[in-house]
Image 1: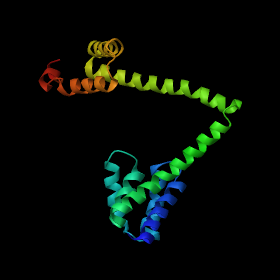
Image 2: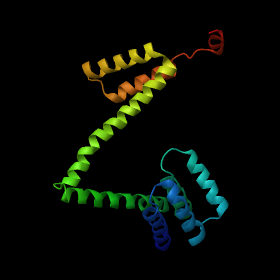
Image 3: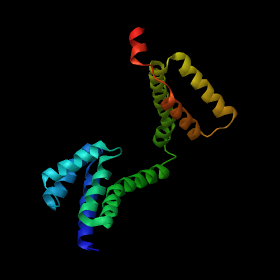
Image 4: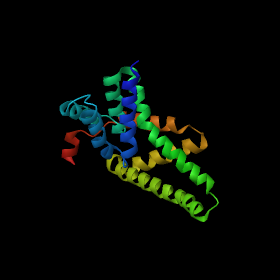
Length: 188
């Protein structure tokens, strides 16, 4: 194992992770500076290709780019090093934040912040459910959407069915449901 190379991989992605406040868009220029300009592991065209591929895949762009670049530059160990360096800043910040909150949990400001979280999350979940309901009305129609909601609620509450099974059944229903043909849509 090439320890100086692994150290460089770690430092480059750790630096980008620590300084890239705001997530993916803020870290991309920092990763570019480290990978292309500072270490010269690839040129602008290769970096652009990696960025384009990373944008097509689900998940945070920084971890996808770190994993690929780390693997390309340092093999499997480089992949693990780059991912650890990418994730570590978030872990450190979260541990520090939680430590502060625990140490000052009796203060009125911290109690107010933690008390305000539950209603905010509740409103966000309500808005998400409302948006899903609007889309299901458009895609399924009110009778089917309400029937599926009632059946789901009864199944969940009375039969204590695990939510993952219920979600899987609804996804299966959506996949197997016959969508109206174009001729039916034109006739209406």
